[in-house]
Image 1 (cartoon, rainbow, N blue to C red):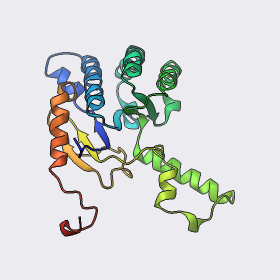
Image 2: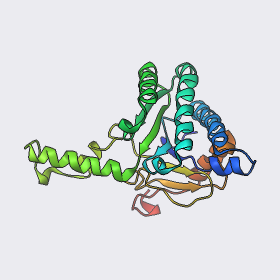
Image 3: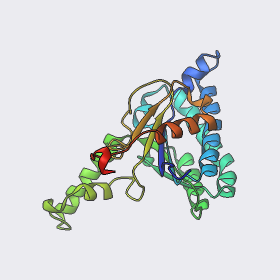
Image 4: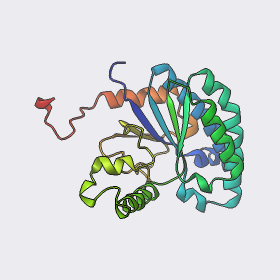
Length: 237
């Protein structure tokens, strides 16, 4: 318990394939995926984790069929309203990162309401990456840094890694220690590319709806078995 990751990020993959394997519509996979979000958030709370970031809807997901996007957005509204009381009860603070201007107004309003209602939470900070892609985030950071230089608020020589980090959507959030991806794919899919520079990566064949508390514990135990050297040798640690 004294070697827990401070921040876990998860790519929740496999909802559609989980549903297809059961001869169900993809939307049912997403519904069961919400249950997995609740289970993992509860486990994170019980363990005392500080940050949990979930890749909920990527920029690329806007290219999916319209009926699936509509179903996802409707599910998001329902899930936000249903889960808010439990988030408050469990002292969870909700945040969101991404191009939220693309999210339908109804979803965005309910999301902001939940963020406000949970803002006093001092337990796990649950971050939803919505309409998010890392290339979008880094491009936005580059634009804003360029404006700051053009306006004389800083010079090009002032730009450092810390400067870039302060212009990212995650500026007040520590970098993930552990990235988990479910569903059997072995890639990071344009997710937190800057922030994952020194994260440990854990991939599992389990589809997201099947990912429960024991699955999370297994991933954390795997993380704890690794030696994180950050460029040093074992002898220097």
